[in-house]
Amino acid sequence: MQKQVEYKEAIGTKYPEQVVIAIAKDKAGKANPVTLGWTMIASGSPPMMAIAVASRHYSIETIRHSKCFTIVFPSSEMADAALFFGSRTGRDIDKFADFDCKTEPAKAIDSVLLCDAVANFECELESETVAGDHIIFVGKIVCSHINTEPKKRLYTVGPGHRLGAVS
Amino acid sequence: MQKQVEYKEAIGTKYPEQVVIAIAKDKAGKANPVTLGWTMIASGSPPMMAIAVASRHYSIETIRHSKCFTIVFPSSEMADAALFFGSRTGRDIDKFADFDCKTEPAKAIDSVLLCDAVANFECELESETVAGDHIIFVGKIVCSHINTEPKKRLYTVGPGHRLGAVS
Image (cartoon, rainbow over the protein chains, first blue to last red):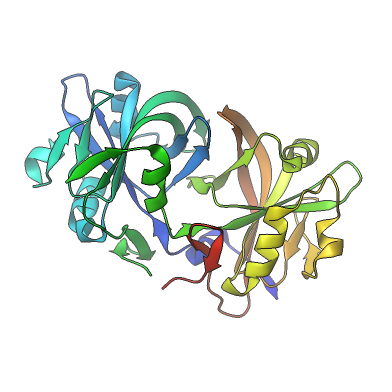
């Protein structure tokens, strides 16, 4: 049976929610990672993914500047990196300089991959759409990578940015 | 360490992926449910959600006609309903007539809720954006409901529409 409640209560049923890290370079060439839970596949052919990024975030500027970005599926071992990248702003710091996280250059776009992730998807910016206090960026996937070792994806498993694996 | 692979191989690392059922009425007033894995929250204030629907799907017509839709978080007990709603087309059949699934009228929009779901979100159509072979619909959430009993969400846990709970 359903009962009507406030949105904030209802959305508490969403967990586990997948986590991705989106990375784009800013004008100075600094790669800036941001952790996002609001993401989905958006097209099968050609393959595309969508991310929703808060309008005030520095990532908006970096994606608009680069017109491309990496979408990373972090592994369940990368919870600390995901928390760090999601709680600081690239306006003030160089996140990759301040948090030890192995990167390598992307192959088809001007961005970076995360070496220890489950998978990396290189995206060319296809469109952006305002949605309330966020902007939805759709990227066409032009190159894909997976880890040579089997890894589990990272999820937000409950409120308060509680991160972990699921099975 | 990363290795470059085809997209189809890389996207195989996406599981578990959340499942929702989107419901909109067609011109004849028939409520038409469709099961979707490509969905995300898109805005915090006002709350909005996005769904990506294949361009050829009957649901496209129903959402455009209604200008509103329900997003349902099905429970882990609703795998059979999710498979049925996701594998038939409302062009040919009345899915709710052919599959036993308890519904009740939505409160703020002209759609229905699924009584046994984890949660139901009533959405007013906010925007649509073409993304490859899909259309992204963004809906503003105007009314929210949860089950009076605690329930687990349904996920696709592996290839071949393998559905279940996660923990």
